[in-house]
Image (cartoon, rainbow, N blue to C red; front, side):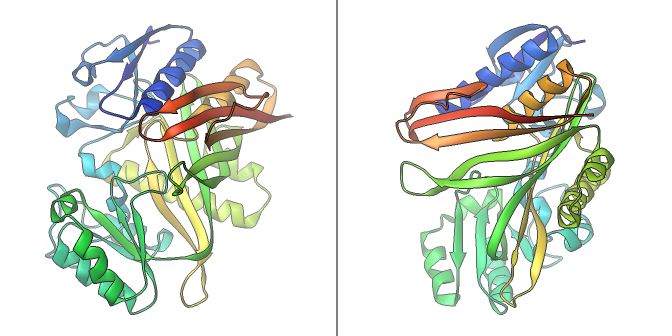
Length: 363
């Protein structure tokens, strides 16, 4: 067993660094070991006795070593060969075989994911963005998203060619190097969370819903996740769920997960998939995996409460847990079981991030 939990950080907003430290301490408590805060990124992989808690998915191309040297018990999060593999762009194919793409692009993955994602393309140049957008606009509104955006930010809905070229006038061409996703826009949509977390000898899998809110800048923002978690893998979760629609959503996330392991050679202890259910421009209801998260995420505070509950009570069959992100000057709810941040962030303003264990179900 690793005897130190190490927070592996970088250049991030203060509320994210505070959350990293808070959850790192909680993981250390669950593992029964000490906590070392604020390690330099270069430290990853250099201390064999450390369990790492990074804010980002680890990319081996950044000089962290050989994939074979790490397994899911070395960190809370995931490891991929290349940095782009941890972003939204892997969910869609290129707009053409000859379109620009990063080195080591997996050309066959988009076709394998086609049945469980929305119609769309991943682009890395202005020319390819225009081609992808015009193709999809022929069938309805589109949504353009930066590969690195999170929390509902960095997205633009475009209804016609005039709006497309207005968007391009404001877009910095250099930003396209990191990739953009161009996909169909959905109406009457709900975003679900499908996830799996392993910590020592406890594995949980969960299904829940995400909540959006409005931040201090009057912009849409992630507001939290509420889920039901069971002990065990994907089959344990589908066995617990009684709703056929929920099962289909979980199976979409599972297929994405399977392909990530097989094609990208993912190593991960924390996996979360955003799955949207909505209506397309032709009135058809669809299920589509929007993106993956193989790192500390918005639901991780609730995930740790669920892991703690299963660790303490072997008789538990399932739990309900929820994470909350509230903007403005407020206090955590009186029933908060874990407070990650409560204060003033220089960029986001006043905000509070906490989690609660909402219910327990015994065998």
